[in-house]
Image (cartoon, rainbow, N blue to C red; front, side):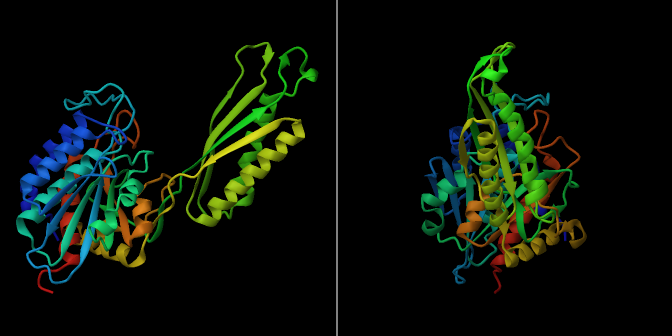
Length: 390
């Protein structure tokens, strides 16, 4: 159950691609250089088709097996975009672009899937078709949905789809997965409170939006604590309060911003309902007016049962069954691979990044030591899903 020897030989080359992507980060849909290099490499591997501009800047490669009698088509997805963060790693390959950084490991995801594409195009030891998907704008831009809306699944005949993400805190080279919800929904709220401003020395002549905001923030903490089943994962976090410009002026308006995370639609809907009810009624109690903006973000990332079990078996072929956690705790982070799992059955797996800085921090770096395991996983997944001898 080892890493594939040929992929171990690719390791330095894959790491070099990864570090090049890391040094030249691009955000959201503006992944022009990254997508260009991905397409160029896929062409050099001799894949059967390279399509660009899917979902604005996404890239798709099609690799047909030595046999193609099964009619099976699976999709393997990696994300390409970076984050708007100033890097502080001090690495020799650190970001060369001020204000942009690969702080989530998408550089590693892209490089590992490229390594798998190179191997699969070289060996073609499977009966069917592998579609490698390189997606823009995972970080808040819903690039996965954009690619689906652009016909990704139907155009390439994808029947199942799989994703992978590195995970700090999980031992390097091990894998973790779970059936059902593995990543949370990501909704945002923006509450605008309007009162009556005035002199800070005459609060009785005002309707204080700051006091109203403070009570709303406190009351919202009861949504998870007193309305959500304690056995259901949920988070409501207020992340921004804006009000006032002077110490002696009670302002007319205040703003409260935050996020709600959940792992099923019932909890998601209940949390929104209670946020609206609590906010409206607290504002009424203080005599203030309130306007609630609510934006539904990524859905819950829900792994499908059969594909989850299969992904775990493929990972076990690489690292051994004892190094595959099949009941990892769900994360309250969000992931737009959720849209792909709504469109097709599939599974999303974590590969351990080891004891590294957390994702989305300015000292994070993808662990190049896990490249052979992650790349081998992609290959095993394809070859086991579509065995050449079937």
